Structure formats: C-alpha cells, structure tokens
Length: 74
Image (cartoon, rainbow, N blue to C red; front, side, top):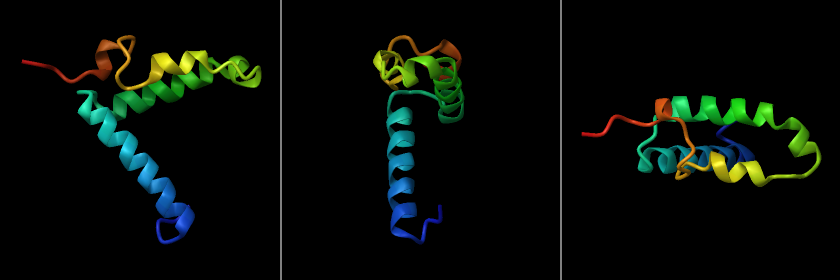
C-alpha cells in the first residue's frame, strides 16, 4: 500500500498507533513486532479455528511479553 492513498494512510495510522503504544509500554518496537509476528505464526491453527484467546498475551501491556522485548529500566 502507498501512503498517498486513503487505504495507505489508514494502514500507516494503525501502524504508527501500535508503535506509539508499544513505546508507551516501555518495549522495543522491533523486538516486540518480531515476537508478535512469530507468535501469530505459532498459532495458525488457533486462528483457523477462530480461537483468538492467545492475543491477550501479545498485547503491549501484557505481563507475558518476553524480557528481550522490554527496554532497560533504571
């Protein structure tokens, strides 16, 4: 999609919103997206069965997000 189309602008806004939410939850965006997309691949059977319960553990504020996705805190 291109950002100069309405669909592209909507897609960009969604991605930017997710990135800012990830940063607000003290996560590293690249590591978080890598983890999240890999996790979706592990749950393809759940998605086909329309079982979306695993998604709660992938939200940026979830306690189950791995330590390597988190920014170091002082």
